[in-house]
Picture (cartoon, rainbow, N blue to C red):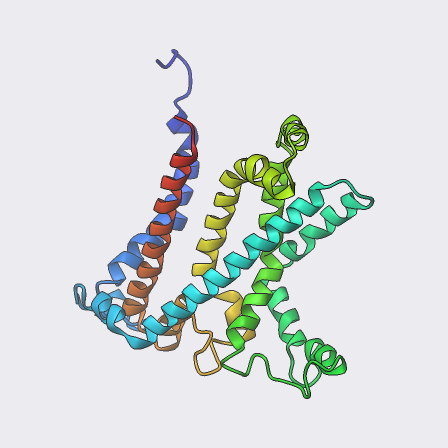
Length: 293
């Protein structure tokens, strides 16, 4: 019951809600409205005609969009998988006591703190076919007989982008897991050692229950970002070569701003949002299942 003279929480939240409604709400509503029309970027809503579900039917039968969806899923599975693996391993390593641990923990933040555009440009230079560091190292060590165009080959371009994304984002997973490890009860580790449990058994019985919930959060956050990936692809490959790295978000960008079909572009964007919403729903169910009754 609200006390006399006290301020309603909704009055305190009103300015924030107004800003969110203006910055987020209006664009979302307009995107939903555009998705059911044949609006073009230069024509505006005044020249748009209602087409119903035609944009969505076309999107789900468009071979190019389905191909971009496959590329996106491939990128998300590979990048999130390796980020999770490397993040957990690095977190376990940095949780051990060794000289220089504090410095290593500080350096771990650097790749993640680097702006995505800067990271993409850096890796594009590393992959450069004529003077890139990667080609120089591999040829001088005898791994390759000649320089290779990593971003110009459809067979290696997406994997090259995945590597650049993993290098930047695995520290986020590592930091989340490392923070969880700080709450791991030391007495349980000691009891497991006294019982003769090996390193893997201690990880399975003690460590995993502690890091599983925050690790799930990290995986979902990274999965959503991976499904929406655009910037690193745009800078490194522009969706090429031969559309080998074209993702769903890049497809939305081309449809809306290159071909000026904002109606169909909005429908493609909503499909991406729906996929992310399904992922969030699955995450919420898994999180509830992991909580004690």
